[in-house]
Image (cartoon, rainbow, N blue to C red; front, side, top):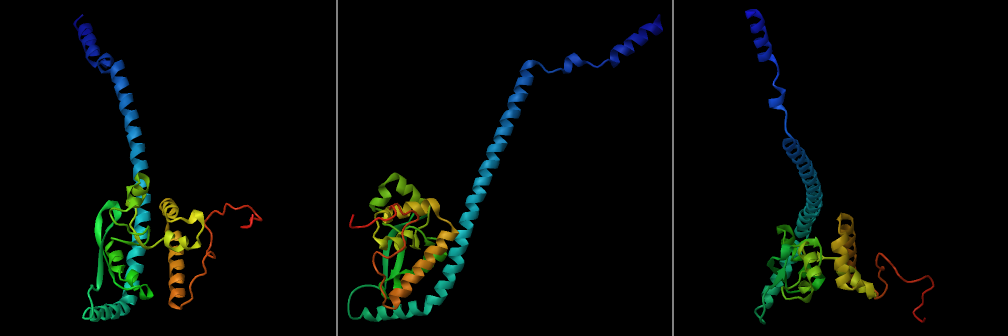
Length: 244
């Protein structure tokens, strides 16, 4: 009898307490909800990281182009800029004015900065004198034109957001395409188009076009008005005539 009781006690002690460890319905629901929330948070984090990586890559390529090409252009233009600055300084003895023009402009994120450029338009030296702003990161080689804080284009909510998301540039789509005189080549439309479709390829094309315009101006061969390339989309029907 004693052996039977001891055997039963040992069996009772060794039996797994499944009832004590089994989770209730509330625990199962909480664990399922936590798992779903964790997976959703993971997907959101991965999507955010992918978008941030893509934006960072695009900004890095554009910024690298600004630093490398901007520095090279600044070194090449330094002798001409020095001569122009010396000539302007000598001219100060004969009249008022300064060597540099200082203007407040709105940059990336809506932050104002002081834009400095030489007081001359000869050979576009005023634009080349802004290259230090490109190297420092206040300007980009290509972008919308730098505007003053009270400009009407910055007061429009959508246009203001687009401009604040980009660095202003030495040159841009509006500067090289507004010469065509076409109604869809208005500066505001061109700035909006660049803000939505800017990239390395478009920047290089704009830089090449700007260099061509500057070269023609230097050779005293002005561009023929109305003969520039059209916008990306030409909405005129085949056989269109101005006489019609």
